Image (cartoon, rainbow, N blue to C red; front, top):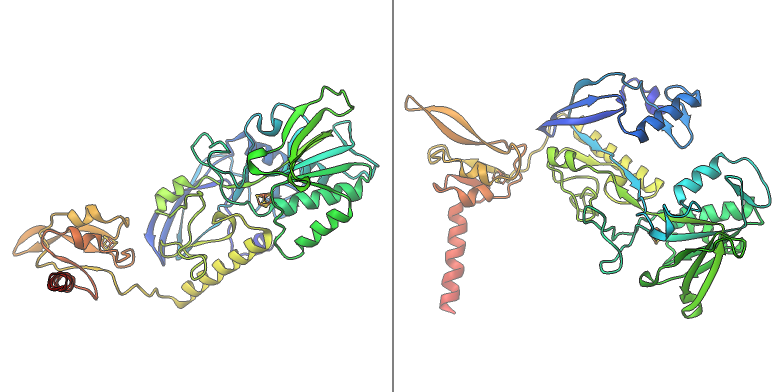
Length: 430
Ligand code: SF4
Ligand code: SF4
């Protein structure tokens, strides 16, 4: 609401960045706004319209609409000194058949359960769902998280989520507590690999769950619980079979009316943006900061900062901390009014440069090195030119120049050659 009310902030809904040019202090972003295309987005817009809420008002489970939805495609550009990325995460979607998901109507995800319970106002003895009385609920942790090669399957793009999603343990246990406290007749069985309620105040949720008589059963990754259909023979539509390591691997069968999958989180797909802005992406598909402790919200692309879960799964408090750090970093860059460049960047000796372009081909930093036409002795010739704001001083261009015309400032190729000669001489002498 504060963002919407702030005259200095302009929100662009339904916007997608299509172009990015420039460097820190001088970035031009091109983007288009267009009416929502996906069914998911259209559903959100419908919910906003039906909520009767206006721009800037909170709509539960939908969010805040910061501006009008565009009715036709529009192109825009903005000039910026710094870019902060807050591309976020999405819940993991279980594969068809994973713990019975998609096969049995009684298997739902935790976000679905939270949404359903958020809308319920009743306080009956048992949880009621779609006209069914839920006498027992199974909650299964680590669905789509902490996946292990050889045990879990890769997704259709060949990826596996080997990381812990970090928020699902606490969210699951909180939901279990709400069920037990609001619908005391409904029993809750919690199937987990490890409990990771690591945040402030979250361990208390775990203790509260024990007091609320949530029953915990622990399983090994290689022997995950199996969800089967009962055919209603014992009054419950589903059963969970598990080897409970808390009772030394005893086989346990738990009849249940509802299975809730504590799905993990995955980064939103930023491959287009990463390709366009040359952003480093980790093996886990999250954007990769320069250093997790020393430069936690900076990317190796100068002037591009990270806010929130685009860099790893995190809870609300951590995401807000990350966003505050990015805002502080952006302010410090912008208020100074100038940008301090790295002193160790490439420089081209124009007298030696023969215009072969080998260095430009070797440079991986888009725009750091390019060919320019200059006049020399009355003739037009091609020479390499460095953009010091984009050069990272990696030295790849130095190594490939056939004329030895490029050096990284502070170090000449001759110095390196002298060092190598000395090492070789010492080795020979030894
Ligand atoms: S937070 Fe808990 S449920 Fe989620 S992936 Fe980590 S251990 Fe599993
Ligand atoms: S030092 Fe690296 S980044 Fe800089 S111009 Fe040479 S190859 Fe490009």
